[in-house]
Amino acid sequence: MLSDKEKNLVMLLELPHRISNPRAMMQACTDAAEVIKRQAAEIEALTESSKPKRARNADGTLKADDPSTPENEAWVGGKAPKKKAKKAS
Image (tube, rainbow, N blue to C red; front, side, top):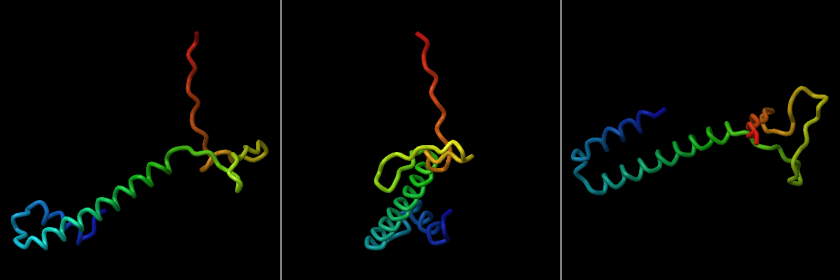
């Protein structure tokens, strides 16, 4: 969600003829670039967390699942990805 300051920035950049000072225009573009980078990082974080990822031990080796527990420890978040169907040959 955009803050009021960011909404004002978008409004200014939609009508660039209202910014008469070149330095102010450059500052508005710099601020917009920061907003875009922040939002891209947020989107990246959301997509990263939705992908299944193998859990690792402290030394970097893959963790195994303990079948005696209900949670799957071998995967971060406890859910393994769905297995792909094999082609019959």
